[in-house]
Each structure stands twice: as structure tokens, then as C-alpha cells.
Picture 1 (tube, one colour):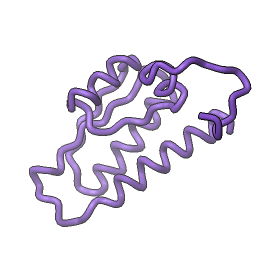
Picture 2 (spheres, one colour):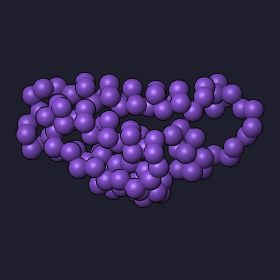
Picture 3 (cartoon, helix red, strand yellow):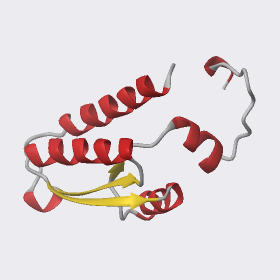
Amino acid sequence: MDRSRWIKVIVLVALVLVMDRPPYIEAAAKRVVVGNKNFTEQYIIGQLIKQVLEDRGFKVELKSDLTSMALRAGMESGDIDICADYTGTAWMVHLKHKYKPGTGHAEM
């Protein structure tokens, strides 16, 4: 699967998760912090997530221009509620797996 297809899948999953929220969430629980990395695709994805959440009544804070490590630290600490990340980044950087050229997804 090429990179643009992965981005579309990640955005779609994020949007489905966001839209699946029940409408009876209390106002205090409707504050969300969205994080994105420091390059063009991430600016767009962060804005998409932010706008969908705002359309659903959430108060959204967008934290932009984050490095992969800062974004991950924010997710782990609870300072960031949602972001889009790449499976390759998660697999190798955060989960510490080695890159093996030619490895299919079924082998992982």
C-alpha cells in the first residue's frame, strides 16, 4: 500500500472514531486536544480532525509543529487526545522493531 493510501486510511479511521461519539456527552467532557507533526500532510490532517470535532460540538485545541517524539510524549502523558501517526513510525521508532526490507504485513 502506498503512502497516500495509508494517510487516507488513518484519516478515515480517526474520523470514524470521532463521529462514533454518543451525542449525550457532557459539555465538560467535550474538550479535545489534537496534535500534529511539523510537515504539510500533518498540518492538513490535524486541521481535518479539528474541524470535524468542532462541527460535532467539541472545543478543540490544536497543537501543531510537533516532532514525532514530542507528539508521542504528549499522547503518553495525556496532554494530546488524538493525532494521526504513521504505522512505520510507530513500528520502528516507538515499538523498536527493526526494518526488514521485503517483509510483508502478514509476517508482522
